[in-house]
Image (cartoon, rainbow, N blue to C red; front, top):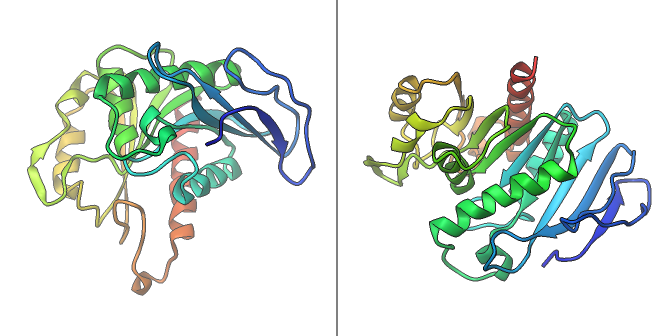
Length: 256
């Protein structure tokens, strides 16, 4: 559990510690500043952990939620945050109450939506000067788009969905995309070409029907977790870097 407060500068020793109302430390100018904190996801839940990773040359902030079976400190989340930081994107990672507690299953949809909204508020307070985007991997991408469709979030430049779970594995007839038509923000979808939770043709058709400017980037040979087979000649780290570059290019285009 990452509850509490610390501010760390990568490769530069310890940094000063001060707190704001979200339990986050004060930013320190450094090549890569990391702040570990917490925030309250809803009125009836305990605080959940968060990590803000901000490079000094950041041009955008991405509120980055994790997939259903992981946490903010999962290797994929850690690697993606580092890769995005290299591309000049600050990230605000966070847990949901269920992942904070380390229990199985997921919180009710209401609680997850409230957590997404609270995370965006906390991230905004932590880095108010940066253009904001929100989304995440799999479940969090869906929850963020659902919150946007319901008018629960505002003042964003766009949404980012890594491996959007369009349907259950092997069941493309059971889609989870009806709400997307009500999203008023531009959306970037980054999906693996071998993702069993997002049939490529169905994903293309779904995105083509949306009103706001949307973009779809398909990652050759990648699955739902952006893993690739050895025969591809690429590593998981290569794929994460590619996803980060795609995200950086798209976010830059939304803010110029």
